[in-house]
Structures are given as structure tokens and as C-alpha cells.
Image 1: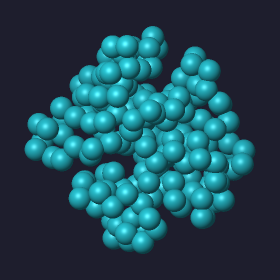
Image 2: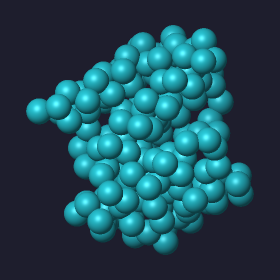
Image 3: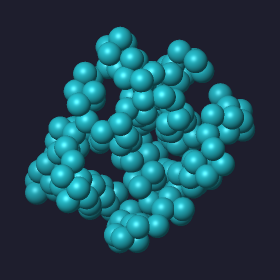
Length: 188
């Protein structure tokens, strides 16, 4: 599927502000893919569709998780995590995109995981630092992303964990595992 068609589909599913976010993620992801040698076409698709299920109802997303073999642990964590794996599921059955690299870029863009691929790292960071994001600490991650993608991920995931702990919210196990995995690899 070409970029223009993908954007046309996504534009119909997202409010204007979220579509602007998607365009920011797309721009940032392409820039990171060029810098780090990522597959531009796959990165484009993952960036465009990363929030495809964001505005589905919570009950609909929970139903997909329960009935379609997705990680059942997702049901015990915040609703913000649901749209990523559910979006990957819907991308396959509604749009017909079955490329596992693209689907995993979407599936893990909110949690991360152990052994993240380059595409998964790019989508995670692009979602975190796209130009419309304005929060404390984002500029430092942007600067690191221009120099070292893994360092940027460690900082971004660490910031997310700190935020959740401060709010007394659960931290999804894959997020902790991704953070530990990146730190262990950094020490090798």
C-alpha cells in the first residue's frame, strides 16, 4: 500500500489533532529510518497506522484482546496500552497488511519489548518525540535520538516508568523487560 492511500484511510479514523500527531510520527520515523538504515516503506506504514485503533471503544478493544489470542495481561493494565496490539490485529483483518515487521512496530509502540527490532525502536521513539509532543524531558530524548537510538530509548522508557510510578500506576512487564534488556546490552 502506498503512503497516500494509507494516510487517506487513517485520516478517516482519527480526530484532526491525532492525525496531526500521526503526521509528526511519520515525519520523525522517516528521518530516523534514513539516519539508522531502516526500511523506509515499512517504517512509513507502521508510523501511519500506529494509532489506527486508538479511538475504538475500550470494550471493543478488550473484547479483541480476550477473543483473538492477544496477551491477556493487557487487560490488567491501563486502557492506553490496548490500542497498539488491537491496532496491529485490525490492520491485518481490515486493511490486509500482514507484514510482521510492520505489525510489530505498531504492536509494541507503547510497551516496547525485549530484543526490539530497528523498526520497533524507530516507531517507539518517533511516537515519543514527534514535533507536536511538548512535555518535560522530550527535548533531551530528541537530542539523544539524533545521536544514539538505544540511548534515546533507554531515556524514553525510563521516563515512562518514572511517570507511571509517580502516578502509582502499574508498569507493563514488557516495558520493564525492554528497559532492562537495553541496559544489559549497553553494558556488554
